[in-house]
Image (cartoon, rainbow, N blue to C red; front, side, top):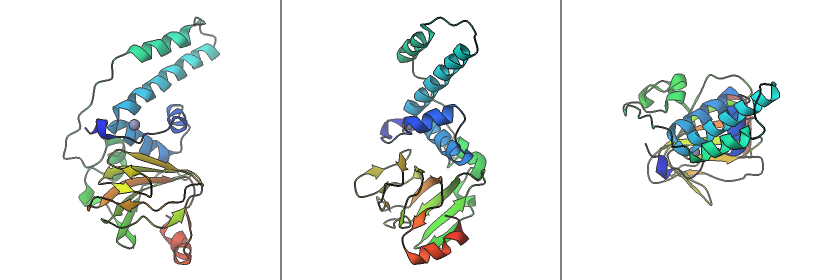
Length: 216
Ligand SMILES: [Zn+2]
């Protein structure tokens, strides 16, 4: 477990939507995969779940004292961190993800999308797309601006954009205002899970033409 090295986490909006079951499947997989790698977010999720449960009880007329919510929050604040679950090291992916892609990198059905970059699209419901990306050392992710929310979880290696560095377990959340060029860092391939809410808008004509074909 590399919990202590994770610097970029799932944000509150995504956590809340995940906890209440309102995320598209593709985003849920990515959030669940991050949570399985990150104690901090696992604790945060349990807080959301507990608070959500209390709010639900209050709404459904079950007798809950007026201070129940505060009591619960206090309890969460003082409770011990949950037990870590150690995964066997032979599995290349966090468990929520291995349900979709199997346990080994060797069996991924990669599809080349140019510049040495490869992808493998997960089979999820249609509102969002989740795909594994393989980025060779020093290579950039396809040049794009974002439309909608894009969430990228690093599974192996690292990538860096103009301002920040993302290592294993880190999550980058980008939106339509983000315009950057992430590059696989540290001289080794970067493998990540990228989830997009809507098709990416490529600035380059070539990419725009092939976009419908590769469903990126
Ligand atoms: Zn986290």
